[in-house]
Picture 1: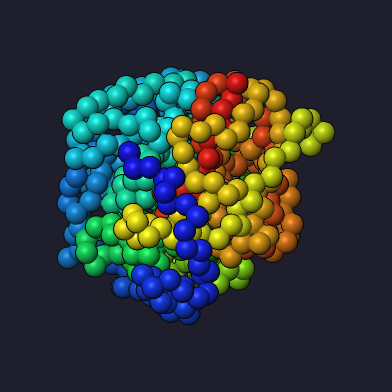
Picture 2: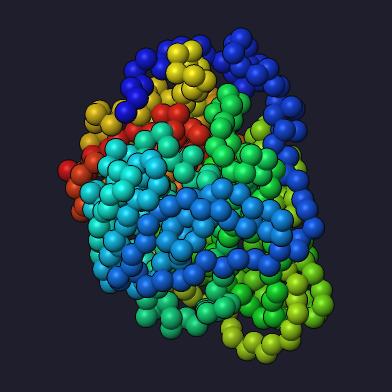
Length: 486
Ligand code: C2O
Ligand code: CU
Ligand code: CU
């Protein structure tokens, strides 16, 4: 493993004026221009990952060639029979998950179960990797509430590269209680992982200094591995499980018809009640479970899932673009009702917190002159070191953690392993907790100028976990610390 100690305290530079000689001198306007999304005609049928039962699963990670659309193929990585992404794992709360995993890549990898409460040895700690040609047995009880979780590789300094090339999948938890709600199911329950890719170069991962600074962006938005996708729907309610599986891009999801829709779940599963919204902003790692009713759309009409422009950061949000085309092709009677209540979310009282920890996430990045063009992103002044113990907490206790980006210039989606938290407040910037940040969360976005406070009750699983920025270039650039649950 490469040591990080010598990356530190090198040339500090700012986003607005990249001043070091080895950097490409792009100003903010040029950075934004170079990261624009390019739309093509939406004509490729949306791919749907195969579903598997998680109680006895087996798959490998391997290289392949994926057809992303007509005439568009790329060298990719995938799990199991998929040449890109992996199967959607479906399992019930309380069951035990078992996966015989083998690594058929030519590099080390592992799997992290994003959002799931799993023992430390099962969590895909960055240095707990499976060597090429080797196997690992994952098994853990599924404790989480019904909801949309996901899995992806997490090897130290290679997460961004492996995720970019295609490794990720859904992990959907259900329960009897959820089934009793009669939410749209089967073909009407549609997981959508949204990612941007750079097709020039066929998904090879070769970030330059700017990419390592603000993150790897692609001009092509793919959904479930399909570029410019189209999805045929009926005039009824659908459940869409939106996952931002991109390395760095933030999406401000909305529908081109302007129709309101209902938010029913966030990162950690169902909300206590549906909330009507007109948009949902998701940063890398975040999920939103939504209900959309095509009942008002005549057969023959077309509309889009799109990303609206947004303010708050200089490097993202300037452009609105289409993501997925819906074609309403058939009339279907839908007399299902929107549930009034979903699943109780028990609020953790602030008064239960025994400690508050504040992390400065607004430190300027540093530029390494020795390790190629590595750009390091500090978290609270430090970069990741697997041999260090940064924070120690006690199982079962409640703490407030503050992610302070008030002096920062970049967006950082902060993610905690081990358990779910609740968002208490946001000061500065947007100044509010957004509707999609209610319920249980494992990732929360801090814009420049924002300080976000979360509250967490640490689970009983003791051991070493990480917390980090889910901009994957930032994560691989060291913006990750350890915390140990004792
Ligand atoms: Cu989805 Cu540690 O990340
Ligand atoms: Cu995670
Ligand atoms: Cu970040």
